[in-house]
Amino acid sequence: MPMKPKLVDAFNIQIQAEFQSAYTYLGMAAWFAEQNLPGFAQWMRVQWQEETMHAMKLYDFLHNRGESVSLRPLAAPVKKYTSAVQVFEQVRKHELAITASINALYELALKEKDLPAQIVLQWFINEQVEEEALVVEIIERLKLVGSDGPSVYLLDRQMATRPAPVSGAQA
Ligand code: OFO
View 1: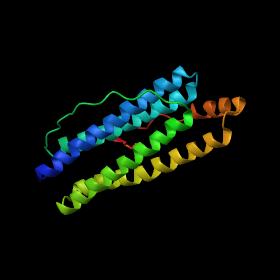
View 2: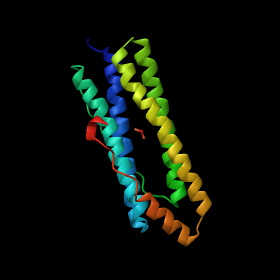
View 3: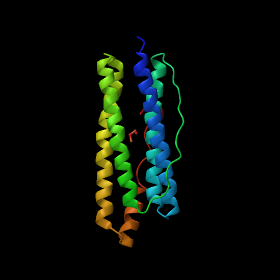
View 4: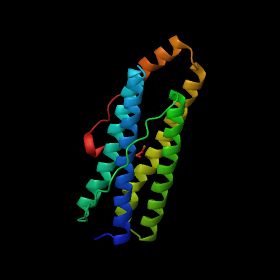
């Protein structure tokens, strides 16, 4: 069953938002690498992969529904950060905005009575709960270690252990 054009447009805008998230986190990965925090840089590279998967999940969904994917331009990420905790505060802010856009998209899918769209978006709603919790945990840990060098070093090593996302675009 074809999707309503308004819903297709909203999915395309969300694809852009997910790729923008990926690009933003890749910029953060570069910043961390430049601060000699390779573990945090690696964590952000995994996050970049995760966000690319989110975009591709929506991209595949539109294709599977026989709809057209219209890719939009991305903005250059800001790379002027002052501390690791400030980076993660930005991540939190960004993820809250993504949660709001996913929720609005879900509301639209409900309004348009598009059941497959609702189901795919439920996955995203759950994912946002996990992402927000994860980021808050990292912010708390960063606040706890403060500027204590050895603790920052240990935390950086721990951040490096984040596994890569499991199964490409299908996750
Ligand atoms: Fe970070 O969840 Fe997608 O954007």
